[in-house]
Image (cartoon, rainbow over all chains, first blue to last red):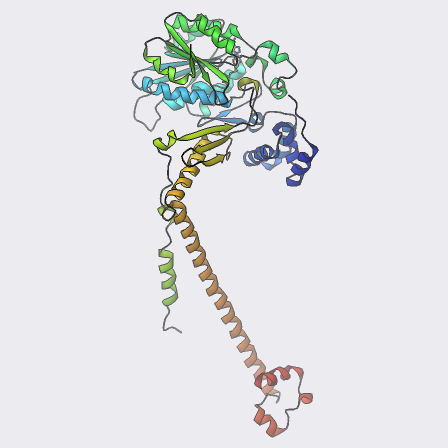
Length: 304
Length: 187
Ligand SMILES: C[S@@+](CC[C@H](N)C(=O)[O-])C[C@H]1O[C@@H](n2cnc3c(N)ncnc32)[C@H](O)[C@@H]1O
């Protein structure tokens, strides 16, 4: 939805700083623009300020310009070609970590598998929140693995595990062709107890519509964005069921994706919808009835 | 002069002694789990609607409302929403403490400390001022003595009124301008 920004806003911005008007198109208002310019100045050397401002004027994502996105307590590296982590994802991952914490603590070993992992932000933050740190003398009982089809994403995710100093591992693979990934996991002696995923969930029709956010369409990879029910089908049928996992959280963007996932689950499953703090449908959460994952119910505002 | 060399350092030391050290300040108040229950937290994203993968917002603003008092705190100090949530809680906890115990809160101690530091600086700068003035007066006295000596050598030493009257050289016209000052001062 292109919004017309009054000329006066640009004039006011120019009064404040010659670089500020560059930030108006992407930020819409003065306060947000000031905030972004402040961050640019804080994080980049002065020689790069003008280039940064010019890129931002073209709606180039701030996170690609600065190279990172905070995610919980972590700083996740971002690179063109890999989707930038969203605050909505950060929000549910932190909520999930709180629910999983007592379960993880009661186990000798605990494995979490994240499919369609991108930058690796989800398994990295879960590892950070749930794993023991070097300071604690407890042995590490949490293992996290991320899978993505994009070599660019896997490379970046591995870099992120280095910079965050977390032992999360990454495997390249296609969620529609689980055999090779499963073979790798077997070799790594890894068995998942829980599965998370944030697959591409924007229906093609919406993505192609003229009112679709142009900064996302122009600068973030289509491979990470466009998808629908087929992903939820493969997640349930090719991963949840064969691996006999008892709980999952999948991010999504449409109510029909929730209902679709619910209908794929057997009678022994319960599932519900998690809404984000912007009151939007954000995740489908599933757990085996009467099992240890009943506490996942607490994440849902609506249970089917 | 050397009769009371300790008086000033001593009083200054006493004053400094009462200023709490930065690391000895009362700890920052925290939001207790019970208080957490009566907080309303909103994430201000500027506009609603589409979210998730469909949009990439950099806004990380957090707004906390303490329901019992209506106190509101907003924060967007950093790009990290997680960090901003923590900062907002710190600020709110402080505001609540200020409201509950205005005399003894951390802010009250901080303000008192600032005032004391300012006062001690003021005192320091007063002393400096006095020293500068004393120095100036001393220089002036030396200059005057020097001038006196020169005038004396030139046989133009300003005399006291009675002396001048006696010797008949007190008239203005005969005096060089530099001397006039002195004679006027002598009057
Ligand atoms: C919406 S992004 C999510 C990235 C990350 N998990 C996050 O939350 O920021 C979806 C990711 O799925 C990957 N992807 C797309 N198709 C895939 C497939 N068939 N198998 C595995 N990964 C796939 C994309 O490369 C992209 O990184």
